[in-house]
Amino acid sequence: MTYLNLYLVFFVIGLFGFGGGYAILPLIFQYVQEFGYMSAAEFSNLVALSQITPGPVAVNAATYVGFNTAGIPGAVAATLGITTPSFVLVLIVIRFMEAYQHSRGLNSVLQGIRPATAGLILSAAILIAQTAIVDIPLISETFWKNPAANFNLLPFLIFLGTILLIGKFRMNPILITIIMGTIGAFLCG
Image 1 (cartoon, rainbow, N blue to C red):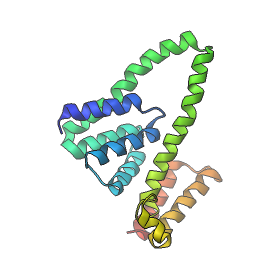
Image 2: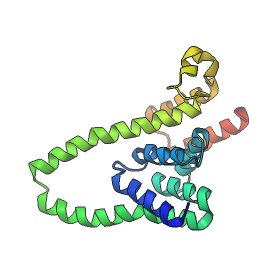
Image 3: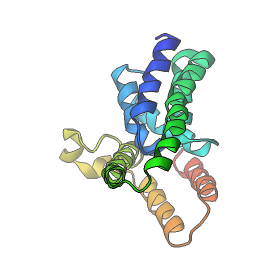
Image 4: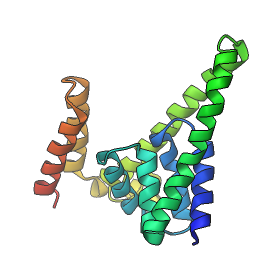
């Protein structure tokens, strides 16, 4: 794959990936699966690494895919591809929003985009859960034949613990990532 192709694919993802990093992850996953660049488990690791490294998740994921595909030039091409549309669109949208901020039509469009974005984020969460909590995808026939045999208890407990620490105790996500990574290193490895 050439650098131009990486740039163009990630340009399209950046152009149509509304809702931020987690909403864009299913688009990136579809791309890497279509071209056979990484497995679902590798993609799950990519998401985890993208989350714990500084910067936006989608940009980190694009950079990782680009690097994995074509080294440093590929990482640069993918990063520029995913960020160019946002940069240009933000400049345009700022002008547009200032002029039409009280428009009923604009507010209606935004009300339609919000639930679609929530759906995209949920699909990314399901994708990650499939490889983090069960050994095979939830949508496969094999999983439903014997779900208990494919269920990983410890990752599920880490998942629940994370929700509890954030939801009830409002713990810092960075601290939670360090704690759960340490638990995973000792108990899952």
